[in-house]
Image (cartoon, rainbow, N blue to C red):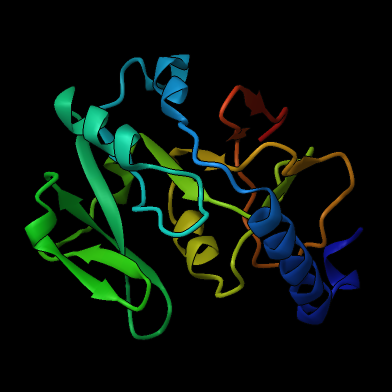
Length: 188
């Protein structure tokens, strides 16, 4: 599917379908195995997120990154729906609720070239590395400014061989992880 052939309504229908599937099949699992991947071997700064609801869990990953002395950055939503990154030391008292999401207080981290790896949420990933997110475009804008290796977390059955609809602003990821494996996408 070419980028010009899809509309946001196509993606909205898929999001609704995939959210329903996720709610029906959701089980609490861990993605901690991703930290054994070679891409994590020499990282010093990782951007991640604080999961909520039925998103792939990140609490154990984030805690282990901090324990290893890796600088952990979390996203903070801006008024224009863009994201900025804020370093977080694991102190839950330094978080504030923004809707369903907890976000860090503090100064924005502006040296995005210093981010080695970014972990992002996704509803579905196709075999070309196209990520279907929640629909706000926040992560796509943020990912477009990062040269870091991009890893999306998804549940079992959320990596598809069918192409996902994409638009010009959509950003691909380098890999996707389920609770059991990491799939790396060639050429990304």
